[in-house]
Length: 194
Image (cartoon, rainbow, N blue to C red; front, side, top):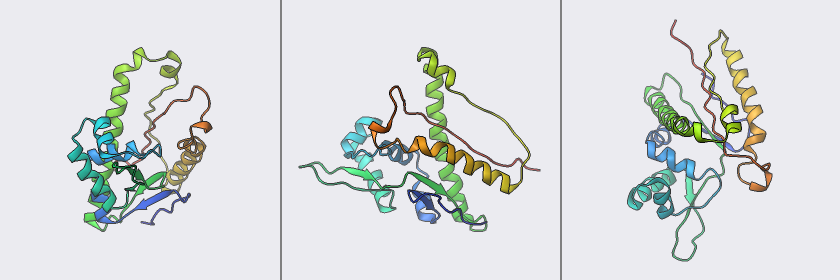
């Protein structure tokens, strides 16, 4: 399997088994998500945002630091904040022949997917009370098709190209049009067993 190459310098390829294993804990996925907007947060602020204890947040933040997913920010008096590394996205990959690394990729991917599905189900529970304009543009697409590996790769690249300009608005609120909301998307392609 060829290693995917990031098409932007702010996308990180994660292929080391120990780094992949660090991403298999569901709470670490939640913590990484807290930092996506570029904020610097303390363990106390992470605890307030997640409902976890400060001690648990501190432990998981140190683990994420150890494997290079977050770093320490500049101290603010007695506060010791954390911040995300500058990557906009992560690509998880491993050679199928490296069973341990490949198992870590699938476990980390499952953790990210479970988090995304939890968030989608939370939206389902409140969608009827949301602004109808937002409810009608929110969509879930379920489909299948026949394709070659090259066609599936091209599909992913085309989806990335469509999303990229919207992702560029992430860190600078002044780049966001009036009325914009934070939107999430799950996209996955896989093959059915023959």
